[in-house]
Length: 103
Image (tube, rainbow, N blue to C red; front, side, top):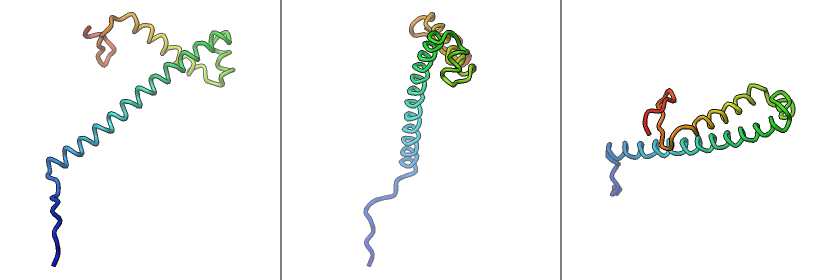
């Protein structure tokens, strides 16, 4: 004689809800990681900017940091972009073309 388990298999709706919950958890994890990456890049951009000032230019900083000039310029560009964003009003919302669409 066999004993059946009183547990029922989850309904289709329950399975889909669980799948969606897991997907949202993954998206949340990725979003948090992206925020950390942007913060680290911003901190690196500040450090590279200071190195450029300290070594007297992009070329010298490139040699001392063993980093391509293009990378240094990319980080310096990030700082310029941030300072440009500071000119926008607080609460500004941008669309995918980086145009301010709402305040």
